Length: 237
Image (cartoon, rainbow, N blue to C red; front, top):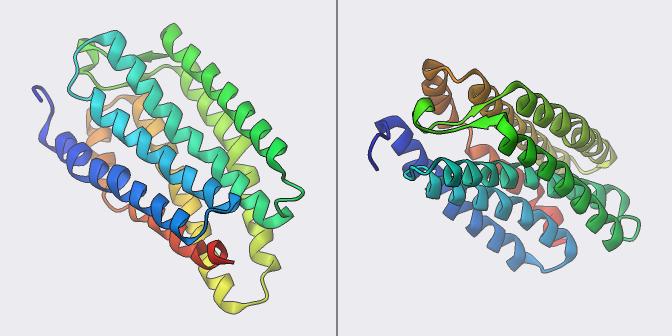
């Protein structure tokens, strides 16, 4: 654990591991306990993907082999972004029904987004990400890596997810369902806020900005539970 500043240590091993790792796996199990139907499996995968991202992040932080650390950082980034496609599919299935968004469409969507993220990893290995002793073992993203992941995630995932989620909200007649769905929308926005914030921080690579962002993150992790709370009723139907 040498050379890890106290704030980063607390954020990773105190907050991220507890909330982003253990708690998210528990939420995924709660979702699957409600029902094993396809909709629940898709939503559970959102939390499982983020939990895996957190666990890989915890693993690489104390390591000091540049190649291994870079690989694990890219895997961490991959799983955090991979969750996006499950959030999109969850909205699509609720809006269009699982008959229209059948298993083939689901698999094709996941495969497409996986290919996009593999492209991101290739850019990272080709010099788009630097993480070694010169960066104090903290990730520094190059311009090509940053632009690729921001444009891809916003255009291919965030915009359609918010659009379909808004359509679902407008289709509700029940006031309680509308109220809960607002929480879900807030959760989506916070999730992408966290993703964008992490991206900007890693691109700027300014120590003061990193410290301020870690403090902001303390109040953001509850957003993932809001996602679960907002759709708990739909998961039972």
